[in-house]
Length: 470
Ligand code: SF4
Image (cartoon, rainbow, N blue to C red):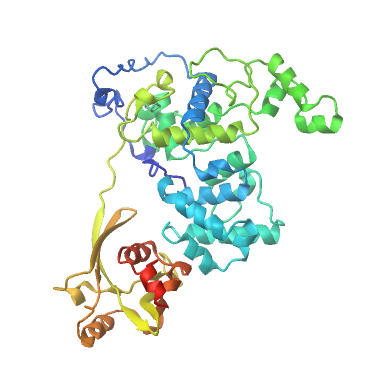
């Protein structure tokens, strides 16, 4: 599963159409929307334009990222566990939604072993509101596996990371490069879009549409992303025919700083593109000593560019650090999104007093349910059971391509007891799936995101006045 961040969504490259020339719908970035007097974008690069210069691209991207990277909490740590947690949370979830959950989750499970030792229900409770709960279950399983089978040490390469539950190709590359400096490109929806536009391959469309002898588009994107990665120190040393640092430590021929200096002078462009560059001018390649994690920084910069500048709609080309290198400079053709489905749905909010405590009736979903197994939600009601009633809350809740139009019904506080009983009897679930839960405990149980949203909106959850009564 890939990151989505701002507007990247699912990869849609396999859906795009295949016009022979730039289509009318491919607007040229924000140039047409720029304020009067704003500079015009240069024309699109001609097909004969020389291939992209990876060094120039890296330097501009790196300098831009240094100045414009958002200060996100997972960028302030080198702790592989924290980076791993962030990458799992960022799958299919926007950055803005992740930040608070990330901080709360790590306060609750500050280490890999704390996560491994926790009951699954606690992990799901801490995940509540992020959705896609399978991620939390897999993260928990992987933490237990690492503690039991790997002495608590996270694997350090993408290939090894992929053997863990819940870690696919994208996530493995992200963790390996960001936490362990492996020179492996991360390709998420943002990176795909940047590369398609940058290279002008946006006009090439679905895998099925590619001519038989053309390279597969996904392979093309992956190869491009890898080619843009900064050269690692050991790659540069190899290019300069200098023994690697690891071998050097055992032979003791040169120390690290001597190797770096020799490599830089023997192969002056090999290290260009590290994060010691301070210019965005794309001047001639120059030797630069990469930071210990140039690959991780580069990958994050690529994703940041796609998330904040090279947007799916109306990319901000006039603010783009690499627009003079870009062959598209604007949107690229994509297939229309699948239409959103609409579905009305009703829930019951039933509260009762037990001594000083307030309790709310919740339904536990079956353990073998396809979606959100074993999680708690407000009891669903059949729509015909509430026909003609006025809900206490209306809210829209989107899950993938479905908009749920949610109505929440509650017995009137001063209404007859028969009203509450009638609503309760309308619940289709078996009684053993229904539980009265103290409102003060709601933050400790695995609630569905929708239940959490409704209970917050109706001030049942985290309501100090209810808590004071207990
Ligand atoms: Fe525009 Fe830059 Fe994206 Fe090219 S890479 S389309 S110039 S934002």
